[in-house]
Image (cartoon, rainbow, N blue to C red; front, side):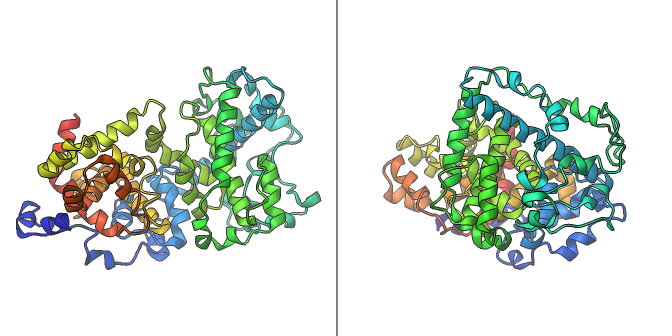
Length: 499
């Protein structure tokens, strides 16, 4: 391709100085971040050494071994702070578990009101007492009802000698409860070791220094739903369930544990979230669809401004594939959506802003190509809409998607942690971290097709068909290599323009 030839020409190399891409042909042969290397990055107190700089470098340059992705992703997606200790992360786990259960109870309350025909009530009127229900409702969700499995008490207490239960999807049949249900509720987990006679529920949560009453009044739980009604939720719910049933089965080979779930367990989970019309699906797809429903409905309540839009299930599905615990998967998705949520605004301002940046990158790199796009009235790069919306998910294989996203998340984590150009320079990472790596990759994707677009395509529709026909045909590392070149040469110029 012209773009590759241009970037690897002598003149282009002089322009870039000695900055070699971390994803070049030679460097991409390096092994991914392994479990042994991952464990070595932590100090005795459970904190990442050097604030996580070495970790981000390795994640960014080499990718992550599939066996440790479920451990690493919560750090990349901001569920855990890079400077947190093990004790602090245990406290976060407790807090996030409580918040997630509250969201699921709210979903149930809204569904109940919806079935009664109260479609005009606002959401905040419905579940203002949800926290009280979590304590007093005798039918409050069990671990086995909303989670993928029972969880170890040692997960919360930090006690390595505590009881550890089977984490397989069918584990709830082994916990001693009646009818295969767990006898340990989520409240039992975080109130373990406390005096259950405390009627005001202001108990300390497992050494975290925080009380239950403090957590229930947390600002993070005060969600503004004043303008959203039950009808909004019903609309989201219908679309979520349709998209969940139609989920791509590509994930199955990547998660043998979830793929092997029994039909009984899968249908029990589907019943718990109210999923129907799944008789044509295999058990593993029923289970996956049910997990999608649980997480996406909870997210619609968590972020009612966005609610649910088609395409969000494409972003969640890979996370559920890698992370088997529903609660942790949900908060990873929340972390992912902190930036991606702008793709799903009804006014499309987020998408248009990003397409404008892609257009600016192409214009700055290749004036001839940009002029041709202008002639086709395609300079707004609307043909790349889907690439932005679901972040290459439909153009790349699942494994390629995860590689791209991990590099992108590492850049975003570096920016959140305040790791600027100088720190990355000391690590010899060449290009500065950027919040917009995805957009540079999309621009690289278009530039790789420069000759084809100029010589053969005479309309934006033809370019769009080309963009939508490359599924499974892309080299993600070459894409990152070319994106790196664009970041090195254009990042400061683009940032100055945006400012």
